Amino acid sequence: MKRLFSAVLASSLVISAILTGCSAGKNGGSSSQSSEIIPTEALTTEQPATDAPVKATGGKVHIQDSLLGDIWITELEGVELNKLDSSGFSSDQNFKYYSENGKPASLEGIDVSYNNGDIDWKKVKNSGIDFVMVRLGGRGYGDEGSLYTDEKATEYIQGAQKEGLKVGGYFFSQAVTNAEAVEEADYAASVLGDLKLDFPLAYDWEIIKDDSARTDSVTSAQATECARAFCDEVKKLGFTPMIYSPSRELYFKYDLTRLKDFDIWYCEYANTPVFYYSFSMWQYSDSGRVDGIDHDVDLDICFTNVAEYD
Image (cartoon, rainbow, N blue to C red):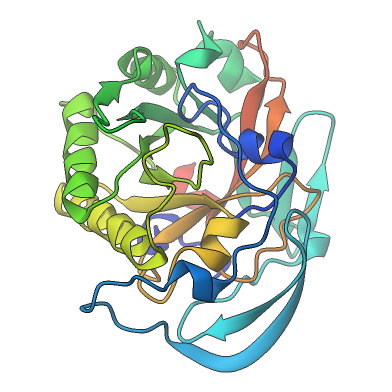
């Protein structure tokens, strides 16, 4: 989304409720994560021999992450840094906004799945929402890992676009191999059919500590290669790829030097985002209220050259 969004800027360890929130509406099932920080070394012990080592500058960076707490990371070589100015954020009773030099520099959005039920898209548009990210489907847990379509995906996309909202999509992944990640990208494209997206098609792969989750033992190297395989296939299919992730995965699971060509949709429920590297979209709440939707909904903000979407 570097070209698509002209971004103005370059995982999660939390209590179980907060971490589940970062994947709320993503898979329609329960999810929780362990309460320990997994050192990078522990996540990279079984990398395939073909994987290159993580390229780091060697510089240590201290971060006070709102979810992970007080941590140190090693700065990665060539990965664009977060250039957001915390003083540029503002909010009202509904949404967060971002501005630069006194001018708007953000778009306001939501992300939805079938869990959000029937939606009055005209009311959503009139409430001040500019864009929506729609779940297209996902891969189930367990050995079988069957692919499924979100039953509301087509309805949501058509309804939102009819009212002039910009629409992107995401796919909840449980890929454990590159081939499965490619299969998921192809499946997402098949769900869309002839429908077009205005915003990216995002890869949503998360650490989910669940007895039936397929991804618990996936190495850092394999998780990274799955993300890259999905995004490369999405790009080949004519869509703009993006990676959805909380900070825990971004710091301790993914090798961002292998993913720096793709924009990040970052999840952190905080007043302002503190992620060290660049991201183009931020999911900041799972308990937003938007006219036209009867229940809580995830809120997002996109940092962009707003003029492109007037």
